Amino acid sequence: MKVLTAKSVQVGPDLAAWFDAGGGQGLEQALADPAGIISCLESAGLRGLGGAGFPTWKKWAAVAAQPPRPEGGGKWLVCNGNEDEPGTFKDRFLLSSTPHQVIEGALIGAVAVKANQIALYVNAHEAKMLPALHAAMDAWRGHPILARVAQEVGAPVQLQVCPSSGLYVGGEETAAISSVMGKFPFPSLKPPFPAEKGVYGAPTLLNNVETFAHVTHILRHGPSWYRALGIGEAVGTKLYSLSGDVLRPGLHELPMGTTLRELVFEHGCGILAGKQFKAVFTGGPSNTLLTEQELDVALDFDSLYACGSRLGTGAMIVVGMGTSILRKTAEYVGFFAANSCGQCPSCKIGTYQVSRILERIEAGAARQTDLAALENLARLLPGSGRCGLVDGAATVLRSSLQTFRSEYERALQN
Image 1 (cartoon, rainbow, N blue to C red):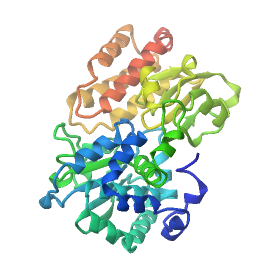
Image 2 (image 1 turned 90 degrees about the vertical axis):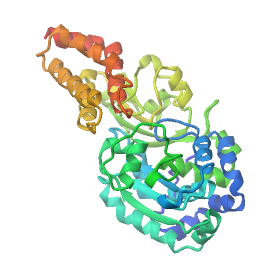
Image 3 (image 1 turned 135 degrees about the vertical axis):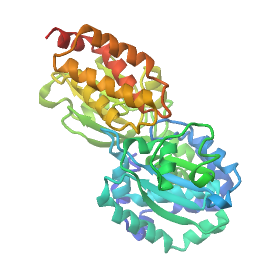
Image 4 (image 1 turned 180 degrees about the vertical axis):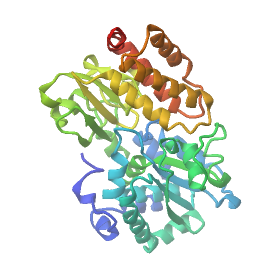
């Protein structure tokens, strides 16, 4: 079951060890049947694992349908490993411990969409893993299979590692494209979408690190095998980043559709100091809070959506009784405010104002009108920015107000 984190694939930059462990078979299958790659992913039901959950095959098909743009370098493929949101740490594990399954997945993507430019876009804060990534890329450059990929793509394949700006907003796909081009990571309006106009104006495929890692195994074992790994209607496995008030925080690869209760109390071994469960920030701090009533929800895209939340990156930040939701909300909104690129006034000013009011309420220096102001901002801010940053701040604010309003009221009475 543990496909991505199995010890047999934690071989670092050693490409020979990766092939000895069965690596390369997915790419061989892709080269044997390039036209079948996208339909294979469609049959597998793979969705983007960076947060949005968009069907992977649709994005790949859109890029494959575009002609290359020679003046933009042909076609680009960007593997997004910016990962800078609190509570999310799956991509850094994959890139540092098992980079070859990610690179192989990217090469399969290149074959599918005929991309000749491949960029590993990684968080600049993770400087320690950069030498290993460069070594892994060098190993592929020197391997004969890369020439076969180039032959199928129809152009020499260029592999590069692109450190990001280190900013959270740089993970948004249009901001990532801007950053790969050496510019400030300003998100841009869509359309046009990256599939039509991405890096240097060329058609660009952009997926998350974990998504490409799954591709490798789907091509190797087939879509039926992948679907059987999930629970119920969910497919495959998922890396859940578990943190917060749990006894055993860490990265857990489990079947997609595992319940929140199982993740927290079996794999996370329960709440610290024997306390009771209070809530969890699902998919990182930019989604709706879930409480004890939702402990049996399945952790997959559709089940969480039906519950009014999102799977996001799979990060689960657990809060136990005794930990203030108001304090955590203030902390996370402060993060969003500090990471706004400043391009959209509603985001730059709105998140800053929300952060100031939350700090004032927590300090006992607020009035009832401040609570009304927060409610208005939670209603007005969503959809007002070019990217999802302001939406995330508004979502966690609105959720905390709805679910833990008593904490706000108590702080106002002090």
